[in-house]
Structures are given as C-alpha cells and as structure tokens.
Image (cartoon, rainbow, N blue to C red; front, top):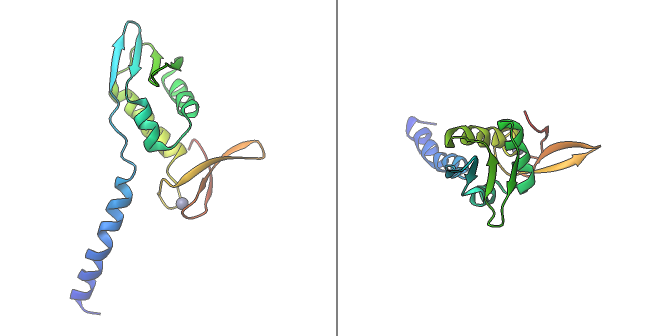
Length: 134
Ligand SMILES: [Zn+2]
C-alpha cells in the first residue's frame, strides 16, 4: 500500500472520530445566584444530553459540591450556597467520566444498571460492564 492509500484511509476515518466525540458536548452551565441559592438554569437541557435520571445527576452534584439541592417546578436545579459555573462544570465533567462515558471504548452509549445491589455502567456499543463513579 502506497502513501496515497494511507492518506485516503486517514481522511475517510477522521470524520467518524470527530462525530463521536462531539456527541457528548454538554452545554455550559448557566447559573444565577438567587439569594443564598445557586440556580442551574439549563439543568434540563443538560440532562437531555446526558440521557440520565435527574435525581441521579442531582445526587452527584450534591456530593461533589457538599450541599443540598432540589429541582424546582420549572425543572431547574437549585443548589444551596454560591457556586460558580466553572465549579459546576467540573462536577458535571466528573459525572460524564464516572457515569456516562464507557471506559473501554470511550463512547457515551451507556446505561446504568443494578447488578447484585451494585451500580454498574453497561455499554450498549461494546458491551463492557464497568463500575460507576471512577
Ligand atoms: Zn464501550
């Protein structure tokens, strides 16, 4: 195989890789301080991208930020205390790494399942089963 063939192959495969990594780009958190609370305005839009249960994501944020939270009637997450957007972004990135992205193949095509009372991350793309919260 000549150099030209190699080049053609590289060009053919590159778009697929980019498309895959683009699939899980979380919206930047839009947060607003309201008294002593931090309102995560686009929480629902973020959940849609993650395809995860709101309570599960909320619990992770509570643990990461060390505070209490609840979801209001408009679907926004209200955190007790003042948190900057970049702190919340970090916590959400950790959520993606621990509970969404498959550690074997790197795709976000996963589901959280319970096996023998323990939470596991099952990948629908490659079939790997991994512990959550890595
Ligand atoms: Zn996988």
